[in-house]
Amino acid sequence: MSALSPAHWLGALKREWLLYHLGDERFRFMWDAPPAGEWVSLDCETTGLSVHRDEIISIGAVRIRGDRILTSERLELLVRPSRRISADSVRVHGLRERDVREGCDPDEATMQLMRFIGSRPLVGYYLEFDVAMIDRAIFPRLGVGLPQPKIDVSAMFYDWKRRQLPPYQEPAQIDLRFATMMRELQLPLESLHDALGDAVMAALAFIKLRHLLGD
Image (cartoon, rainbow, N blue to C red; front, side, top):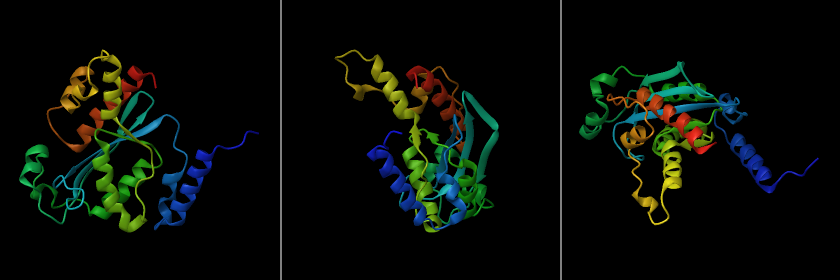
């Protein structure tokens, strides 16, 4: 029997430390082994772009199994914020305060999301922002953030484009805008900007890029 690597031991130690400090035992399942070949594509709309001040007003998530997007296994929630939605944000996602007034309580929304995700790795476009917003919302309950592996399709797209560059061209010239990525991947781009639609488009990009990158 081969000895376990230091990285394995470190990972196991970190897992046990996080579980020891977990504020709500009902969510231990997020640290379980994920179902093989499954992911959750995720997107959030917010009152603004500040991770420290703004709040989530809409959550969209869809499960991926292999090369299939399981649109029958999706989560779409409006969330009631405690602060005003900035005019700039309304111009992006079209959600006004009256649209989310009857939305879920933020705590209930994030609990639904965690149950939906389970232990599956997360997929998204510029996922770091969405995860930071969710982590801030769940930290008072759990004492920790989302533990699942995170896969950013913008990083996958960057790697794919970089492999095609001639030696003299700088990778900084790669256009990572969402519309550019979808066009170059020859994937449909929905004109309506909403959380579930963006999650589905990110899932399409993820599946295509997995094949293009040979992962």
